[in-house]
Length: 461
Ligand code: ARG
Image 1 (cartoon, rainbow, N blue to C red):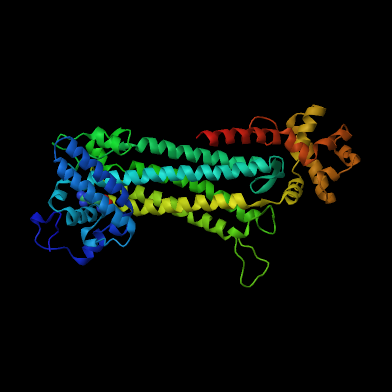
Image 2 (image 1 turned 90 degrees about the horizontal axis):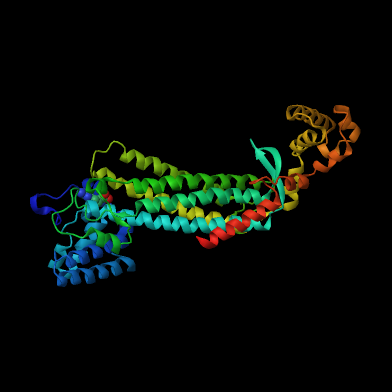
């Protein structure tokens, strides 16, 4: 049979395969709350403007509330023949209230309707991401607070570079995630314009009040151009791109957890809550959650590229291609929220292995830079020469199979005759981190200042 929503000029129903490719209800039913909120605001505005009667608006509102309850209760008979959430809601409204339901779609199109629903859905996800990020940052800050002066190796090229503090490493992630958080805030602020009232693409001849619906739905203002309003998916792309960058950060820490929890590193112990055993190897504590995050986060980047690919080259305004926006964003948002929650749990529960971290920090000639700096400061050597002398000392230690602090003063003097016993003061890892008090440096004192700054920021936001 011809479709009830546009059946006027159609004689035949669609092919079953057409229904399969066309219907979005299996996934866009997630936007039911947004769809119904948008319709209620639209109907109220139509009545306030005298475009529909107050009685019809009241019937529509009551009916929509019932539809919302039915959907929330579960088991709602969503129909693929009705394509999407918009028409499923309207069809059920018609069953419940009859004729007045037909007035709801006055001065509206599914094009502005879907743009509105999806924008509100993505806006909610920005809020959820911001909340998840705040909790995760708080977990990193708590780790930093506990371990402001625990010494660990800092790496470049995954080779021991210089000693750093655990707290400093934790706060590096707070910085990354803080930028992620502000990207979601920025995206949210930019997307917070209401497309409802753009109608199909050109606006409408009815005397609608777009400012009223915008305000009722929590938007800052209506969108300014109707063509742009129905064809813009920037808001979803900004969400995906902020999510992709955040996912990249999360995957880096996931990777560090995998490395750090290995028997070769033993930097952290992950709690039982985030690890699994092996059915054959009794000693195993596998960091599955971290590995799964490392892998799953790629889906978000895939979604970002997929939606860019859908949108690129589309002529204005709406094309059905754009229906392919939602599954990507839904999957990315689900993945992101799961990842943020899992990462927060892992960070809160992990236990730094402080003696192992310190021992690792002291190996690999990690204070060679401190030695070179001492030669500059004490013997007034040019840094390049100090670097060369230190290289020779490292080579000597390597040949003797010891670390720098284990060399004798005679060993030192065989490389540079002016070296004094005072040099040994700078070869310890504690001295090394304590000395790095330049702004943004790893010294425990700096870390405590930054913990205080983060604590204040988290309390305020
Ligand atoms: N299900 C559609 C989507 O997700 C809704 C908009 C349909 N508009 C239209 N003119 N066919 O994009």
